[in-house]
Each structure stands twice: as structure tokens, then as C-alpha cells.
Image (cartoon, rainbow, N blue to C red; front, side):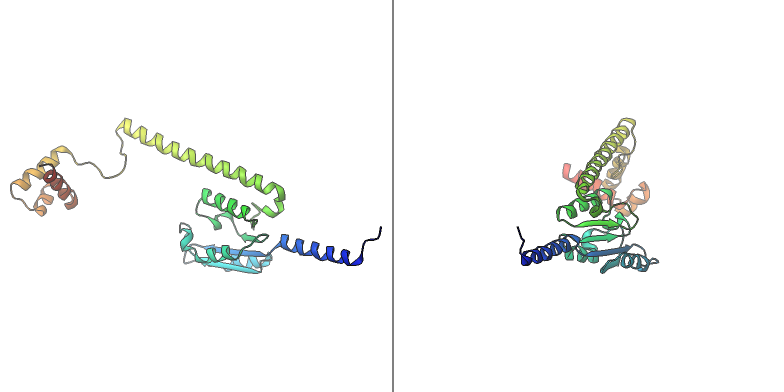
Amino acid sequence: MKIPFGKVVRDMILERHTLSEQMGRKIGYARVSTTHQNTDSQVDDLKADGCEEVFFERVSSTAPLEQRHQFRACLSVLRKGDQICVARLDRIGRSQVEVINRLNDLQQQGIHVRTLDGLIDTQALGKMAPLVIGLLTGLSEVEKSLIVERSRESVEHRRKTGGNLGGRPKTSNKKESLVLRLRKEGESYRSIKDQTGLALATITRIIKEQEVMA
């Protein structure tokens, strides 16, 4: 059975188009966090790796996504089949949890992630990529649970041992009584502060609370 030449050509064009879509573009993102750093070396490395466009900025590693304008711009141009390339995974998130969540989001959009340090390349992982990211997500949930558990245990331990639980330190009943007595005797807030060593805000709170209860 002879296959029409035209069909062969069309199939070849379609296959090439499909492959091109799968390959996508390689977009880079570079970030530094301090004023004495610059993004030049990261940008050069990303371009040498084949990135056709590189977004870069200087912004704190603790800044939320809303303040990472160039990263948001980078994410906005990515489409299915593209690859975002960064020097390290910490470029795409402020914490382990945020990084893993973003990996998962990009995976769901069909966008690949690659780091120049070789830690991850979801395109090279192929069908294993969802499994790897799923495993990382599971580990992230474990880490969150451990942090919550450790915090709860720490609070419980300090409660049992009389340690500081944080927040505003409680003023002793003796000092509260002294504040109220001095105020009743006509002393000014400033004078009470000098005599008790308490902050004006604390003195004000004690007096206001007494007035409400009266």
C-alpha cells in the first residue's frame, strides 16, 4: 500500500511542530538580595545555558511575590512547554514550602524547571517529574507538621516550667496596685513612670482597665 507523499510531508511538519511545542522556550530568572551583589554572573550563566530571555532583579530573599516584579513578569510570559531556568531553587521561593508549591504549580501548567546547579531538571525527568515533585510535596507537609509540633511542645514545656511564653510581659499585682495608689493620690503619669519604672503605655493600660472595672 502506497502512502501519499503529501500525507508524509504533512505528518513530518506536524511532528516537527509538536516537537517544537514540547521543547518550548528557555526563559531565565536571576535574583540577588543585597546592594553589594549584582546579577551579572547569573545572567551570563543563564544566557550561556541557552536562555533566550533573562529576567533579573535585586530584591530581598524574604520579599513576597508581590514585590518580586521581574519574577512575576517572568512567570507571566511562560507557557506550556517552556522551561524556566534559575541558578538555584531558592530563586523561585522564600521557603522550602513555597519552592515546592511553585514547582507543583509550574508542573501543573506544563512548564519545566531547571537549575544550573543540577539539583533538578523536570524536563529531563520526563514522566518521573510528577512523582519527584509529589515526593517533595509530601516531605514539605512532613516538615510543616514537625514545625507545628515542635512549636506546640515548646509552648507546653515553657508553660509547665514557668518560662516566657512570649507576648507582653505581665505586670506584677504589686506594681499595678502601686500605680493605682499613686494615681489616686494625684500623681501624674510621668511621675508614676519615674517612681515605678514602668512604661507610660503600661501605666495607661493599668489605669484604663481599672476605670472600666470600676
